[in-house]
Picture: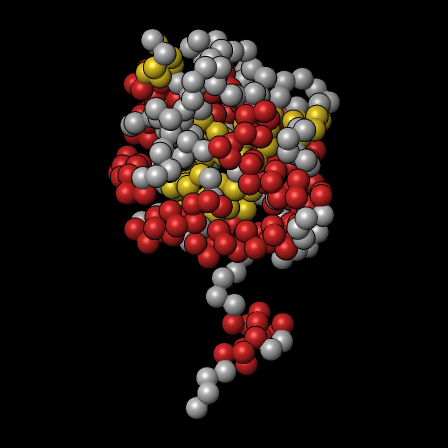
Length: 322
């Protein structure tokens, strides 16, 4: 007997019926960059279609997104006063805290707000922590990160997402939140964050490039898959609610391996460089942009991601690609 697998590929209706990997709008988290001021909508050159928003214009854009089904967002603060100690990062008047308050006032629990917790956009040197003798000080940085996470929770954030890659920061943040009564504020850890060249456009968007050196002393070496699991399991033990892999496209093997080895939800971050490469090639007519975007989304889900953080989310839903 000849086995004919093509029987179940003959028509779209049967292909949809037997599809092993499916996408849902509920999987998507859409990132935003928030800046000081009012009436600000400013395009980011390196990321076509992505903008800086002041809090007031952010509220209006989020309202449009809610109508499409985008009800989970990730906020990054840009344009704050920079200092050696990153003190503006945990101010109750920070752009992120202000944006969270305005969004919660406008939409309540209809919007789920995740905030990035890292010092890189708040330091004069652009590193993800407190610098001393040209080395990022781990424990001092964790203290700042915990204060930053608390300030976001006090403003109304539903979840905090530390992206710094300091040792012990999940435990430090969890303890700080719990001690102040925020036991229900979740933590999505950038557990496996590689020292990657794919972050270039983001560093323009967030004004967060290191002024000197690089981040290889704290972000992960992409040659070390075994070490990634150690990082993730430590974050799980320290109280993380969700584990993230970043970037996503070049690390599908890591997403799959993590999914096979944890019972926590797994997120992936389809980062700026991945986004901008697709956009640039699409604008040149070198690829079918829609098809490549959706192929990538299915790849993330197929690898094991329960949650996809992507700048493509709005376009996917707006244009009805799924």
